[in-house]
Amino acid sequence: MTPETLLVIAPELLLAAVAVAIYLGGLWISKPLLWRWVALVAILGGFLLWAIGPEKVSHLAQREVVCDSIGQYFRALLLGAAFLLVLCQWEPIPLRGEPEYVATLLLATTGAMLATSAKNLVLLFVGLELLSVSTYVILSIGRNDRLAREAALKYFFLSVFSSAMLLYGFSFFYGIGGSTDWDIIATRLRTALAPGSGGALLATFALVLTGMGLAFKGAAAPFHFYAPEVYSGTTFPNGAFLSALPKIASLVVFLRLSGMVFPATFGPGWQLLAVLAAASMLVGNLGALLQQDLRRLLAYSSIAHVGYMLIGIGAYAASRAGWAGAAIPSFDGAAAFGFYILTYLLGTIGVFAGILALRKDGREIREIQDLVGGAWANDLQSRLVAWAMVICLVSLAGVPPLAGFWGKLLVFGSALSVPPARAEAFGIFVGLTVLAAINTAIGAAYYLRVVAALVFAPRAEGLQPSQAAGPHIAAWACAIITIGVGLWWQPWVHWSYAASPLGPVSRTMALGRSLEKVEPTCLSPWASSEAFSEKNFLCGFSGNGSETPPGLGQIWALGSNEVLHFSATRTEAFVPGYNEIWNREFSENISYPAKSLQ
Image 1 (cartoon, rainbow, N blue to C red):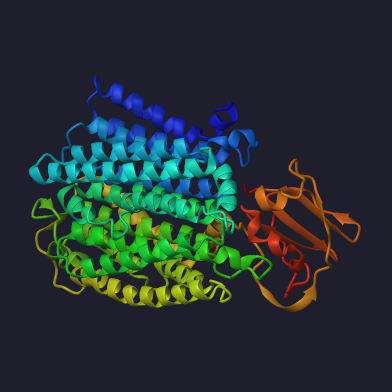
Image 2 (image 1 turned 90 degrees about the horizontal axis):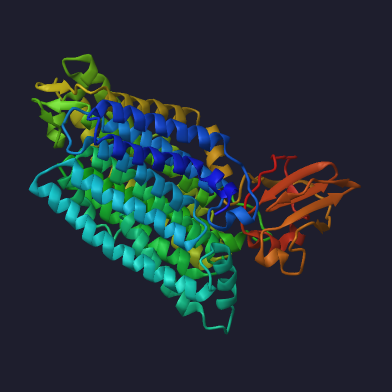
């Protein structure tokens, strides 16, 4: 691992170092409040290192981790989620091993961040297992009763099985590629999947086994069965944790695997995602509809939202082959997934925090009935928390103009943007969109049932605010950001589009001026006939005597002093039809800044 690589993963190294310091310091200093503050400062320090870190690094430094916009985006989300989770844990119920709890939470965040940036099978497995082992510890710390021990054991044994499936799938990838590097595996997969090569069966085994392991970690149906039991047997802070970090990590790996490692023409990738999405939406929403226990309701809710997010990932994977030499769709599945997971985290953590911020007759909130009349409680603090919960619940239901509405709109739009030229995929994703719309209505029923209990009931008796400030702050932070993202969605959507494998691209196609066809001048160290099909490339396109600066992983077209930038992580998205790109007509002159995507 090079010094440049260490600079890229500096936030992860900081969190791991602080976690070790808390483990050791907790042996002598038993001050829970101190260690919570240390954890918050460490996360803020991770944010600072993330913000000032390198935007791009050399090819040599990216053998273990990839410094791209996808990793940067989701690392930021993980740090933000970890910050909110520490606040949620800031509650007066005594926990065994208090210093160890926040230290393990930092290690779990480290593992999730490594998994989202890993470019190597070994580092990916280490990141996912660091997250899993940390989850075992967190579940065992939260409560000390029979249900808690049962929940921790269920998660442990089933997670071990999923890790075995994941490792078995990785062994197939290694057998195909002869390497643990994603890029080399992706290159060899193209050869293995060529007509007549006979590698399709081996690749399908690798995909299915790895997908099973990731589906368990993300609680996607039909690998969800542990989730309701584990949620109901653990604490609300642990439930918030399970709804956040493991899901982000597993879904981002799904995105990298199905959208960037497998070739665009490999059908089983998007087909697996479509099946998991449909099953997760149905199981999650129908299961939540029957629940009165808030933990179980939120467990099924998280399963349903995984289904919506898988639609975005699947739409991106299914669309890639259809983008070659054609118009870029207005809705990008990868970007839709990135934006949706932001709105999901805000809504879900906000609801968990709101539940933690309230007490019913001196005990924790357990069922929907305990929240009756919360919006009109006797004290101002309880009323404010109840209204924050209402905002987060309405956003999760997808009601405009809150953030959740825009997330669902982008996901549905990405499914409908699958190119009609891919008839099979287009039909399936149109059907998925209809199914998702029906499930959204079902989801609104159980979310609004909780809202009705909070708002449309007489003033609550016996409802008091929690003594801890952390959950109150987390609940209202999530509610305020949810409103802000809903009303001023453009910069947030732009951020998610910039994090997409396509990068910020021109997306408006109509009658207008034509670009002059120009020929590329390749400046790549791989400047050969294989440069376009096998590697990211470094090219400058010139026209009318002008030249563009070279950009790594980009196609630049300059004609009649009009500039259009197309970016792609995998060149196959555009290069097979790149000659046609220059003949397209655009409605206006659109210029986006260059961005390095590798």
